[in-house]
Amino acid sequence: MCGIIGAICETNVTPLLIEGLKKLEYRGYDSAGVAVETAEGLKRVRAEGKIAALEEKLAETPLAGFSGVGHTRWATHGAPAERNAHPHKSPCGRFLVVHNGIIENAAEIKRSLLPAGSVFESETDTETAAHLLTKFYDGDPVAAIARTLSVMEGSFALGVLCADFPDTLFAAAFGSPLVAALGKDGAYIASDAGALPEAPEEIYSLKDREIVSLTRGSLRFYNEKGEAIEKTPAQVRVQALSVDKGGYEHHMLHEIHQQPEAVRATLAGLLGPEGIDLSGSGLTEDFIKNELERIVIVACGSAYHTGLCAKRLFEGKARIPCSAEIASEFRYADPVIDRHTLAIFVSQSGETADTLAALRLCKEKGAKALSIVNVALSAIAAESEGVILTQAGREIAVATTKAYSAQLSVFYALAIRFAALRGAIGSAEEKALTHALAELPERIAEAIDSTKQTAETLAGRLFEAKDMFFIGRQLDEAAAAEASLKMKEISYLNSQAYAAGELKHGTISLVEPGTPVIVLATQDAISAKTRANLAEVKARGAFTVAVTTRALAPAFAEADEVIVLPDVCQWFTCSLAVVPMQLLSYYTAKRRGCSIDQPKNLAKSVTVE
Ligand code: AGP
Image 1 (spheres, rainbow, N blue to C red):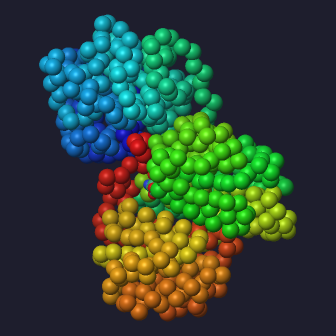
Image 2: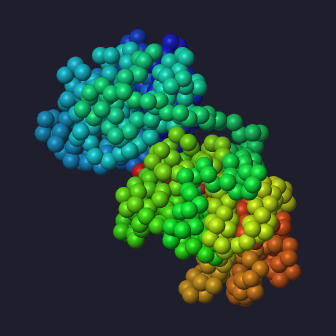
Image 3: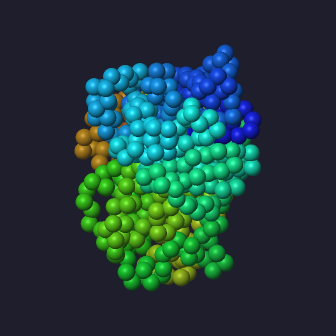
């Protein structure tokens, strides 16, 4: 949610800022702006909409200078209009501020400033920070920032330019991601290290109201009181964000096709010569065998859906009680967890605010915290006791595909190993499952190839639907949840996922002649029940599509359309069933003329609660 970039270097900074903003656009695209320390002083240019609109404005009003900040916005306070676009100006014009996060007490701060004559030109919370800087400034910007931070509540990352210090850039953070980096050609700040213009020689993650001042060749850090502190650089390999679509029309389609590789690379870190190797996860065999009593999986959105699938495996196959929880609910539910609980946090970005808060809660309660994240330099990775990194590569499309698949593959490895250690499966079965898991990337590749055409054709039939339903049982229910989210997220078509047997308890009243009902049916043991549910909706005139296995296809032949998946072990069917559903959403969104990679109202990483 919102992306910040800042640079101080020896060449014109504006093109660097724009390039950085393009890489950060996944974080929000309601408006964008840059401020630069020019020969005529601090200047800003802002535009409503995407970075392209800002570029057009900059073509008319170019900005040149050696230091500057840029911002791409996901609106929280105030409409997505130019007047609310960052950078925001302090009343004296001395400070220009970009902000990511939410200043929760902005209304009170505003009220406290009004009697002194403060006039606000935007509806944003950010502008209050600019006003506070003016109020507290006595010639020392670091001290003014420290005092400003002491007043602000919520979460924030700030980039600040001060007209009195044209050769310095300032930044601070609390609860929102921000890195400060030193490179060969300059010094930088960014909401995501992947947006930095060069590979950093030193990189630091800011937290706990830390402040940094950057000059071309140095970074100086301060604590919340404005006192100088030492920080140790992070030891991580920065994965650069790329705007390359690999020859595909959209990032999403590119990323769908990258799934076999994402899963292969992720499994490479988990499959050793002796089988599944969890030694890098921070989990001991003793804990899994003797101490573990319960697993809770906490996440949001699609990451939560991987948890729904994993729950079926941990509980149904490894025989360990397990629940999958939505982070924003779980953190306020006073959950029963203790040191015998393994809490698993799943996040592509590693910075989802509710997931991070849930992680902190579980740690406080003494649970063992393991995270599955795709971004190494992220708060969730930093704060977890154990981390398994998915190797999906950076995901740009807001709708996740390859990170979802990579997360599922981690869960498969965990479930197989846990099942073996707890004695729920024997070593021969463990071996066979591990072997099948190693082959999963090929099966996913086959699923992409074999279902793509059908998905595209089907989209031509479904794209004008009013409502759509995805139903399934057990693992298929988990896959249906993800399929439905994909559909509504990018095609703006109302879709719902339901446990197939639950439909007749109310929702079936929405099924009308022609309503598309996609029936996911990959589980042999319960296929007869799912087939009965298909018959029920068909009897009410639904247009039915069965997504099933080769073995079950004859049983679902009465569906109007049957999508047959490549053969795969029953544990891993979610990974295949979701593929034609991703493609169906993609092609449906395309037919509906939607903004596929940047759907309306959304942002890739959700750093507000
Ligand atoms: C999925 O397509 C979504 N864009 C969204 O649900 C996402 O999975 C969710 O916001 C969680 O994000 P995270 O994995 O970065 O924590």
